[in-house]
Image 1 (tube, rainbow, N blue to C red):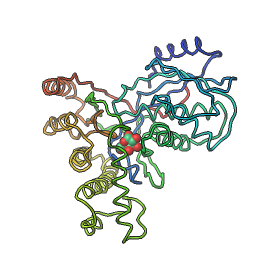
Image 2: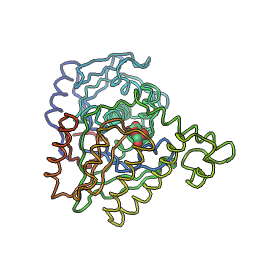
Image 3: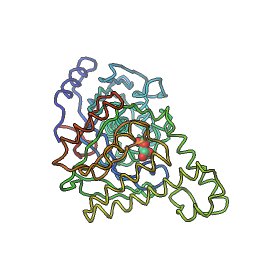
Image 4: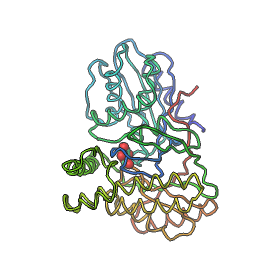
Length: 388
Ligand code: GLA
């Protein structure tokens, strides 16, 4: 993977102007998700991968016991006492402060931290720049203060930062993918047991292509937490009669159907989507193993339909991007990706037809919404790591 030398140089210069000493550097990647959306917080399965776009962080200890952070992209600075971390009114700062605060709950250390960071992930594109930042900062703290945390512990601290500092009750997928990713591999993660395995991410004649709808999603303001609550309320209702159910992971479609009269149509739609999506991830794993790429792609279309019609986390722009290419023979699968309400679609497309497809989709998207489409051919790169 090629790192952005220009950004690293910028961060280095700013770091040296603002702080003293020469910093270390970390790259922490964003993620894509092939399939398994809104399943992580239901203790289900996901299939993400870390990408070559991410957050670069210049970092070093300081002797003033402060957490001092500068965001290159926002041109904003935050400085707080490291012993008194609490949420502030800027999301980017809350990712930073939040993860340090969560680490303080499990390991004690003394000393301050300076960071300057910037990213190559378009903000709001649904590629998890926030998880990348959290994992990068967590990794930096662990490294500098020699805390001995595992990568999974750092991922969990990032997830808790979202819960406690940002107010998004997210699952573990994004942070896990960012810090546990491997080059040219997708991860299959069981979000209940945290068992995981890797699959090769080369799809022979096909490749992954992302289309950015440019509709900015904001999970905190969106209905993300609402969806999670809806799933939890189905579980509560089912628990009245069925002991042993802890999450939607424990509910089969047959059970859900037999108890259908216990909840509203809306809750039925939500929970049946999650159960079906979990099933799709398991099938998807088998199909990837057998190199059945077309069948795999079909699952992506089904996933989108569920996300749009049953889970209702899509938007007209994402629906258009998927519907528009559904019958195109050079596309074998497409769906919205991530939390929803905007961001990117993920597409599995025939390598040799990519150029004409991009042109076609850009034109129709522009005609329909007046928006200039962006596309990304992401590479699957290494998870969070120090750059020498
Ligand atoms: C966001 C969350 C993840 C996951 C996805 C939907 O990216 O951070 O935990 O729930 O949405 O799959």
